[in-house]
Every structure is written in C-alpha cells, then in structure tokens.
Amino acid sequence: MTKKTGILFIVLILPVFVYWGLKKFGTNHFTLPRYIPAIDSTTGEIKMAKRLNPRWNESDMDTVFQSLPSFQLTDETGKPFSSAALTGKIHIASFFFTRCTTICPKISTQIGRVQDTFEGDSEIKLISISVDPLHDRPAQLKSYAQRFDANPAQWSFLTGEKKIIYPLILKGYHVPLADASEYDQAIKNPDETFIHSERLVLVDKEGIIRGFYDGTDKKEVDRLLVEIKVLKTMYSIP
Image (cartoon, rainbow, N blue to C red; front, side, top):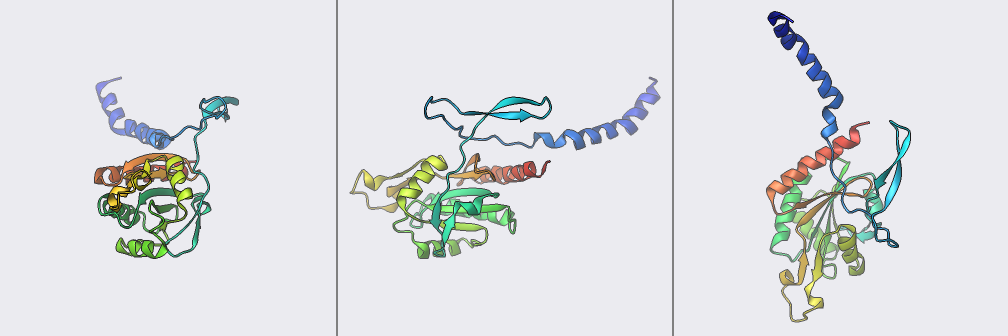
C-alpha cells in the first residue's frame, strides 16, 4: 500500500468501519450487575438454573437472584399500595420517617432530583417506606410528600404494619434497620430511635436489585441517575 493510498484509507474508509463497529457493538457495554443471589435453604449453596444458550443450542447454568417479595402497604392518600404496581417498572426505594431531622430530608431532596430527571416517565417509580409506621400514618406522609413536591403519580410514600415493613426492608431490600426502643426503653428521641440506612435501592422490572447508592451523597445519586438510564437502555435492546 502506497503512502497516499494509506492516507486515503484512513480518511475515507476507516471512519465507516468505526461507525459500523459502534452501531453493531457499541451498546454491549450497557450492563448492570445483579445483587443478592438466592440461597438453597437445604444445601446453603447459591441456586443455579439452566439457561438455553441460543448460539450453541445448549443449556448453561446461571445464578438465580432473589427477587423482591410481594407486599401490600398503604400510601399517603390512605389507599392500599400493592407491590403489583411495581411489576414491569424500574423502581427506586428509599427509607425514612417524617420526624427525622438528620439524613431523611437530605435523602428526600435527592429523590426529588430523581423525580425531576424522569418526570413523566411511566417506566420509573419511586417509593419511600416509613420505618416509623406507628407514627407515620397517611396524614403525616401526605404532609411530608407535599414538603418535597412529590408527584403522587410517580412517587409514593408508604406505611403499614411494622411486622410487614421491617422484614421487607431487611430481607427484601437488604439494607440495615433497627428500632432502638426495642432494646432500650429510655430512648425517646426519634432520631436516636430509628437506625436506618441512607441507601437508595435500584430494582429492575423483575424485582431484582441492581444497585445501592448513598442517598445523602450528590455524586452517588448522580451515579444512580446514570445507572437508571443504563437499565432503561438494557430493556430497549432486543
């Protein structure tokens, strides 16, 4: 190849191959990990399931991941809220209580950023679950929601029975939670009573956790915004 021919190739032909490569393979890097493998209660080992490999027409083994259990709570309007409302949706869960004066307002402010970014996107749902359900009834939740300009069509604030909420947060969303008053009756300050996580949890349309983020950290929430878009893109790829 002469020097002139080589230059011509670089200028005219190479960009075509680059464009073709990006079109064909450029979306393959859009992926997010799955979290929380399912454990076989009889063996204590990670569950595996067969998956048909379409390329080789053979069965491979894939890790089975835990999916969010079904639940029914009550929203800020006093209406029942079923986990069925999250089926086929990408949702972000956060955990708070209305009497909180420390991390909860910071978390809710950041969730507001998520709401603004995906305003009107019916594929995205936001839920904030109270860890103080005895106090946080629908009236308290509604007032709190209005404080952060929550759109009820996209962002729901949930309460219910403690015996449902605590296992859901601990074993469903896999974030830490404790009610210190159960161990020390002398504790009266709500901010010292409810020990809950600042984490936001990204859950896919199948109810599988795809990410954890510090809801008090703007950079972490920036990462969440990007990864929500990545997850949406993953669903759009045939």
